[in-house]
Image (tube, rainbow, N blue to C red; front, top):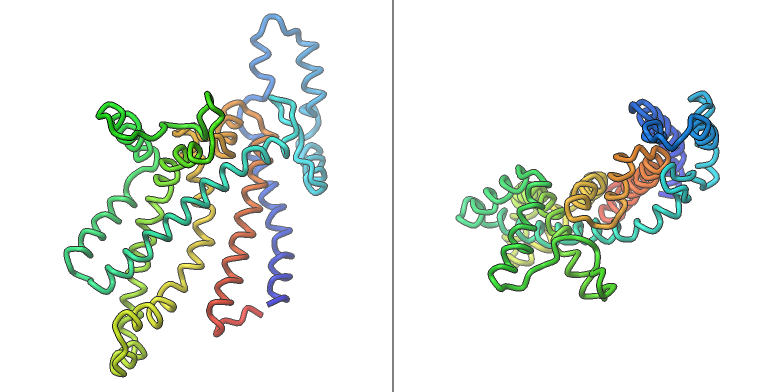
Length: 322
C-alpha cells in the first residue's frame, strides 16, 4: 500500500505539469488581454498601458512567462490577480471553504438518498416504486443543472414567499444585513446543495440498483437465504457491502463533476465560492486568477481520486494495489 501511494504521488508531478501547461496555453489563447479595456479609455495614455503591461510581464515571450509562473507555483506563489492586484492564493483561500462546504454537502446528500433508493429498487424491482424511481432518475439525469437551479429559485424562494410558506433565500451565502448565523448559512446552503446533489443522486441510484441486482443473484446470497438468515441481514450484511463497493470509485470520479457543477450552481445562486470566483475571473480576463483556480481544483481532484483508490483497497482486502 505504501509503495502504491508513493508511486501515485510521483505520477502526480508530470500530471500537474501537464495541467499547468494546457491551462496556461488556453488562457493565453483567448483574444484580448487584461488591459484591453484601458485602450478605449481616453484618460489612459499609451505610456500608462505600456507600463502596466511591463509590470504584469505581458511583454515577455510566452515560454518565459510560463516558466516564470510555474517556478512561482512550485514555491506556493500563484501570482497576483491582474484585476484586483491581490495575491491569488489568498483570494482562493477566502472562497475555498464555501465551495468545499457546498460540494461536501451535495456529496453527502447524494449518498443519503441514492443508496437506500437504489437498494430498495433492486429488492423490489419491477414494482411501482422501482418504476417511479427509474422515471425520476432518468428525468433528474436529463435536466440541465442551470434550468433546475432556476426552477428551484422560482418555486422555493419566489412562489413560496407569495403563497405565505417558509421561503428559502434565492442566493448568497448569508444575510448581508445581519452578517448571518449558523442557521442562516444553512438556509442559504439548502437550495444550491440540493440542486447540485440531485443530478448525482439520479446517476448513482441507477448504478446502485444495477449492482445490487447483480449481487443478489450471486450464489453466496442464495446460500445465505438457504441457511435461514433474515432478508435484511442478507441484503445489508452480505449484499450491500459488495454491491456498494464500486461506488467508492464513483466517488473519486464524481469529484471533478461536483467541482465543475459548482461553477454553474454558484453563478446561478450567487454563492460566494471558488466557482463564482472562476466565472468572474474568466469574464474579466484575469488569467492569473483563472490559472490559479485550475491548479488548486486539479490538485484537489487528483488527491480525491487517490483517496478513493486507497479506500477501495481497504474496504476490499482481495485488492492488492502493490
